[in-house]
Length: 313
Image (cartoon, rainbow, N blue to C red):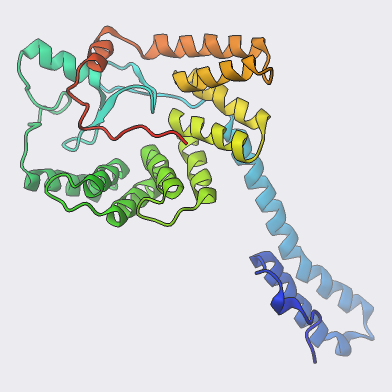
């Protein structure tokens, strides 16, 4: 017996579905002689061998359709646990607290500090914000035991930048970022995407970066949404999909996306009506997430050294 496709070993690697089809074909050929006098049995075997592949293709198409539908829905913003104003991920300045695991907008932190005329501790749980490296790691370990993805992100940045007495280690940082992403942290999806895109702690892989950008966009990260739109426009030349992403990011309050839509209007690729729609949505988002406290926090340099720089692809 010889293989039905003599040159199949020299071809490109086959997918799991193709390998399954080839294996089924081999089985059919081996039992072809015994059943050659029974056409009905042969037909039944062929149907059984192809049904699994058809089901897999249908399931893949269904998942792709569900992802496409969810990807272009305006995500809901989470609220600050103190002022209850929306926090637009990637737009609103906010700080993750290792003591209680809460993400608090910087406006509330600055306002409470100014009101008490001294740093009283965490704005939510009142734990001391000044702690030793040992105490900081103890807090992080506690949050990690509770499967807190944001704690892994913080620990990853500590390894990346050499904070808390650690030696800079990008590979170790990527491992924690990936773990945070697996636990569902939106910031984890964003950081892993940029790590794959830039090759920080892992080999560069733009296709994987694209997939993690999609996950971050689904989680409501406006910067990842903007990067995803830019990637769609530059690499795939898909104006329709990229414009949808830019519109959603602009509706989350991201200025860069609104400016990009304006540039597309000036080059004649987008209508003025589209820009007007984006402008109104952007204004509504800014009005919803802006307060006097948050404006004073942006003007303050208190958090400048604590937050990693924002990167756009």
